[in-house]
Length: 373
View 1: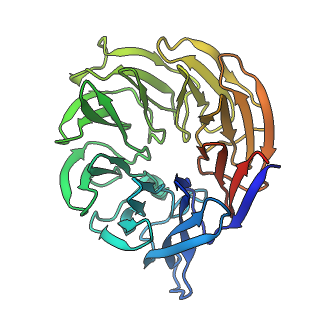
View 2: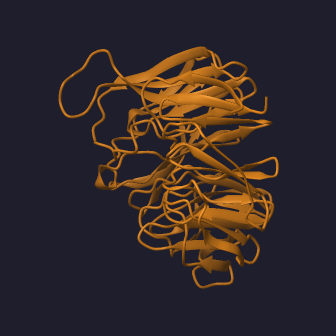
């Protein structure tokens, strides 16, 4: 219902679609025509650009053809990092296979394929996305080897700074937040949630408490940043951005929650409320962003089971999407109110992208544009 267009996608990926004006960008790992034998496939790592109006393919570029050096989780694949764009360039990140900068017409500007080989926990694969901020692109590099976070010049790909991180594998994406005239890079981590100065890479503050191998990305508003994780434990904390050094146990930690926190999906901060799933399932909690007090806790949502996609908000509603392709629409409100339920009839692991009055859903086999007819 209300499918404006639906187009087939080549290969496999769980990266989210990224929209700028009338262009929709998606990454995918596509089996190459030439097989090489062995345990792992020969793949073409692609960036595809579609017309927002009708879904027609505008261009596609193969960034690199390669055999991955390490296996991945059966539900992950090899194209899990979402692209990002500033309207002048679009960036496709394939982890160990490199970061590629293109013009909006698909011309390669620069590439960086010298970060090394990422060795992920239990060979679960790669997936952290880069983040654009000002003249920089922030690249997270947490794995079982030497971990770091990089800031590159977005126009040239040159390293502006690199800060080592005492962290094992983490699949979270960096958040860049403005605070008192400066910008901080906030990253989740198994050892600590940390903040860095965007200009220098210097660590500003840290706080322990997260669970194993965090995936959820931080969100922030009004001088507070919220960081959580939910694998083999539960933790969600609200931290003041004016902290310095180790803030654990200080008044810079405004509140914490120790139950029903999200594993794969990130938090949603909307209208002064934080929404989050319990672990990898569809149970939903909603709390006050300022106080942490719950409006409701781990409520079962009919039609939602296993969850990878993060909740998103648009037009007074919150959209919750399950791996089975079901999207449940609820009111963006303190009381749980289910408005609609729809299914695209294929697996959905990527977080949908709402833009204006349209919702873009990247399924296992298709890209959908949903809009009121």
